[in-house]
Image 1 (cartoon, helix red, strand yellow):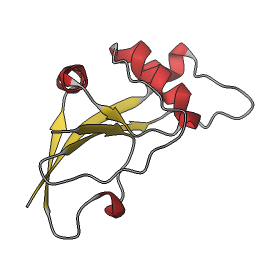
Image 2 (cartoon, rainbow, N blue to C red; image 1 turned 90 degrees about the vertical axis):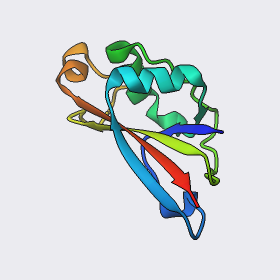
Image 3 (cartoon, rainbow, N blue to C red; image 1 turned 180 degrees about the horizontal axis):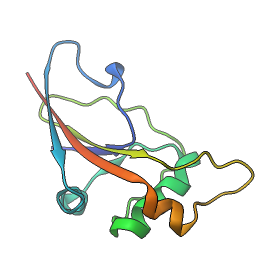
Image 4 (tube, helix red, strand yellow; image 1 turned 120 degrees about the horizontal axis):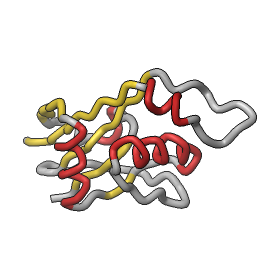
Length: 114
């Protein structure tokens, strides 16, 4: 079973007819899912957000050189990280420690079944 990791989902990622179960996770539970092995579906331009994830929670995720096209099959799942409170990076390439500490991170696991 593959587990994808990304910042968002789109309807095109899922089979036409399926059921999807969404479960909220703690950062510790998300870290355990990542430790089991994930397929990153990230855009390389989001490096600063991944760096924030690493510094805040110690969760290490490889950043692909190109954002992949993801098709989640029956039995697979997507770990989604949401972030609120980080400003747009304009003219810089990383967040300050205070910005990372002040941001709200959420994790949810979306599991696909028939």
